[in-house]
Length: 312
Ligand SMILES: *Cc1c(COP(=O)(O)O)cnc(C)c1O
Image (cartoon, rainbow, N blue to C red):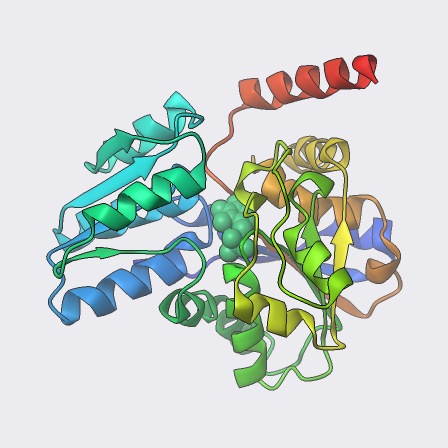
C-alpha cells in the first residue's frame, strides 16, 4: 500500500550542518505522509481478522491514510473531523471515497464521537497510539538499513505529535541494531507535549495546543513514546513556528517539495544548524511530509505569524 520512498543526500543541508545529511522522503507516499505505512499495515491486519470497515478521528494525514487504505482494500471508511478542519482536508478525504462527519471543537471531541461509531466489525484506527501502526512505520528504517547495508547514522531527526512515528522509528532502529544512534525528537512550543513529559519525567497533558504545525498537536503523547523518551539516546528539541515555516519555504526551493510545518519543524533543525546536527558523520532526517499544505496556505501562515508578532 505504501511505497518505498527515496533516500536523498542533501548537498545544501550537508553544507549547512557540516554533516552528511540524508533525507527519507516520506512526503512521496501516495497520501503525502509516512502515516500510510502504519495505517496501511493496521488496516490490512484488521481486514485479515474480519474487519468490515474503518473509523478514523483525524481530519489530517491519519484520516487521509485510513480513507486511502480502506478504498484500496474495498472497505468503507467513516472519518469524524472537528469543526476546525480545513475544507481542503475534507475534500482530500472525500476524494478517497470516505464519509466525513464534522463533529466537536477539537480532536478529543471528534475522537469521542468516533469511538461511538465503532462496532465489532468497524474498527477505529488510532492516529498514533497503536502497536500495529508502529510496526508499519518501522519499515522506513528497514529501507534505510537495507540501502546502507547495515551502517547506522549518528543521528536521526524526526517530528513528534502523539509519538507514533517516534515509536515506529525506535522499533525499526532496535531491530536493525542501531544501538549507538542518537534521536532528536522535534516539536514546536505550542505543541510541546513530548518535551513537557521529558522535562517532568512523567507522562503529562499540556493545557492547550497553539501552533501552525497542526499535526504535532496531541495534548499528550502515548505511554510508549514517553518510555522511549526516557532513553539517554533520545532528546527533545523545540523550534519556533516561524523557523518551521521558513524551513518549509527553503525546502521547497532547495528540494522542490512542499511539506507541512509539522515536517518543517524537523527541517528547521538542519536549516537552523542546531548543535545536535552539526559535525556529525551522518544524519538521517525524516521528511514526514503532510498533505495539508498549499503554496497559498504557506503565505497565509506567514501573514498570520507576522500579525501575531505585531501584536506582541
Ligand atoms: C502525524 C504526523 C506527524 C506526527 O506524528 P505522530 O505519530 O503523531 O508523532 C508529523 N508530521 C506529519 C506530516 C504527520 O502527518
